[in-house]
Image (cartoon, rainbow, N blue to C red; front, side, top):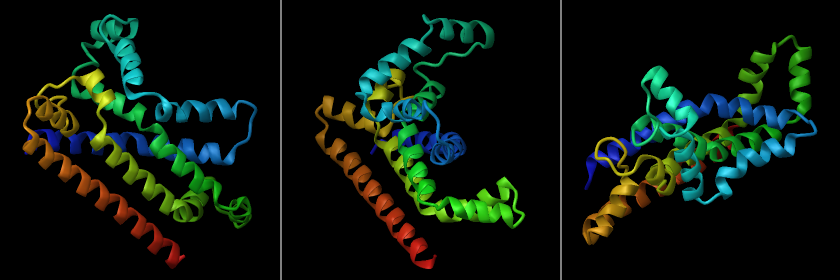
Length: 221
């Protein structure tokens, strides 16, 4: 078992969720509550990482963030930052790739809330923030919980984008998915099977637990 790779994967998944959740909540609710002419294009951009091959997205991120790009060169010269083949670049790529896994379930959860509830809350004297926190978020919570679990689990298993942007640097960018690939390449099928089985069991348990918790929340409501 490559514990270093597993620890790195957990750290990446946790950091991705922490960065993406506030933005994803705002964007999902905004898409659910607003109507405008260009909304379909915004939703298409949100979904794009879901339908693009991971290697294609990883390639464009590598080209955009790499030291040869204008952005990469400016960041290196101004702040001394490099965004490829390190954990920071891996985190940025992971956040971008996981946008649809968090935003879409959140959007659907807020769309399921009747608009007249927000209007009733406003008439009752609640501010927009109080309406969101006391009325909308409790009702949307099952969808938000599912989005969080999907984002976390998907980050653990992501391979293509991680390999393109981060490579396979031990302790820096080698996640458990990359470690499984490396074990297969070196014909260590027993080690690969051990890690793959752990990832399978963990992912299944996490998704099942989120469905169970969501159903309990719905029953309580």
